[in-house]
Length: 114
Length: 116
Image 1 (cartoon, rainbow over the protein chains, first blue to last red):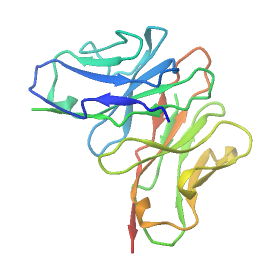
Image 2: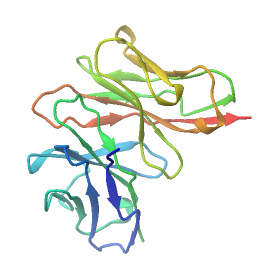
Image 3: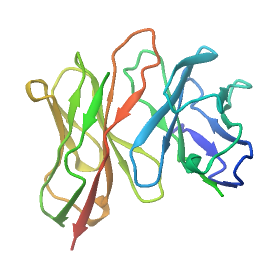
Image 4: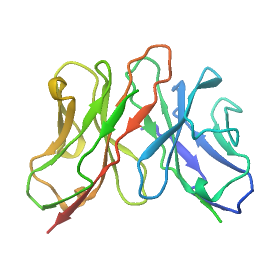
């Protein structure tokens, strides 16, 4: 069964450094998402991406964040200058078009900012 | 804007007992509704979903949920809990807006503990 994959599973970085989190969505999916979950808290929407552009973003998704689909398979989240409060689990999700809103989630990348 | 409330932060049940996890949503129309489960250190696994039609939906692992429009609820149930069901459970709502990518809005989660 096809699944969303994410790399790395765990990323440790120093405050102020740039990180890129990678996701490979399910191949025939057209909508892509990033969510994050700070330890012990709920899952929060960051950004959605469709047709090679951002469809919607939350207030969390400020100028330090960017997303890109550099080729036909990868979907990346870049944090330009990480802060301590960026430490969280980051989930990528994808879905097909016109199939309700069922999103398939990847296993997540745990980002630790020191 | 849509929102989800899960009033129970933590629930403890005995193995073999029945379970009901509560979820209330706020949305101007009929939403898409989901229950996800998250085991410690793991990702989100979809248990079941409601799009339309029969208001009682069946999911994986013996779970079911009932959509009640009059109560804006989508409670998750299981008749007999197994120790392996111990996890965090998230209710989520998605919009039916066409032409948008439609984010999911999650509740704060209910942590289920199962005693033997």
